[in-house]
Image (cartoon, rainbow, N blue to C red):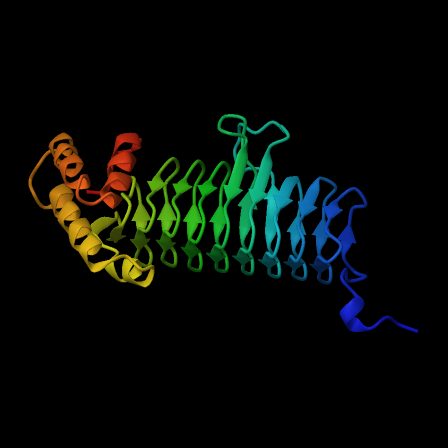
Length: 264
C-alpha cells in the first residue's frame, strides 16, 4: 500500500546524493537534483527541477521554487575549481529560475545570503556577493560579482548592479536602474545611470522609523546632495547631525568605506 502523500518528503524522481546532509523534514520536489556537498536545514522546501550543487549550505524554513540553480561554479574565467561556497540563511523565499553562484578565492571564497529575504524570479547573484537580511529583489534584478547589499534594501525589477558596488541598507532602486556606483543607506535611486531622488521615506515609515528621524534623514540627504558641499565637507556636517540622530551614523560609516564613489 502506498504511503499517504503527506508522508512523502522526497519525490521519487528527485536525484539526491547520499552524502548530502538534509534535515528529516525537508521537502524535495520532482526531478530536483541535490549534490553531495549540500546541506539543507529543517523545514525547507525545494521545488521541482531545482538544482543545488557545490559546497552549498542552506538554513531552515527556506522556500526554494522550481528551476532554481544554487551553488554552481562562478562565472569567472579565473576560477580554477577551488572549493568555494554558497551560504544561505533562514526563511528566505527564492522564486523560479534564480541563479546564485559560489564565491572565488580572489575574494572571501563565499557568496552569502542572510535571512528573511524575498527574492523574485530570474534574479542572479554572481560570485562573492554578500546580501544582508530582509531585502526584496524584484524580478530580473542582477548582481555582478563582489556586490554587497545591506539589510532591507529593495532592488526594483531589471535593476543591474556593477561589480564591486555596495548598496546601502534601506535603499531602493526603481525599475531598470543601472547602478555603477555605491548607493548610500536610505537613498532612493533610479535611471541609467542611476541618480538620487531623495530618501526611501515610504519604506522607512513601514519599518517604524519615527517622523522626527525621517526629518533628520531628509536633512542629511540635502546635506549630501543639495548643499553644494564637497563630499569631505558633507561628511563633516553629517557627523555633526549624527549627534542628534544616530541613524545618520549608518550613512557616515557607509561613506567612509565606499569603494567606487557614490551615486551623486
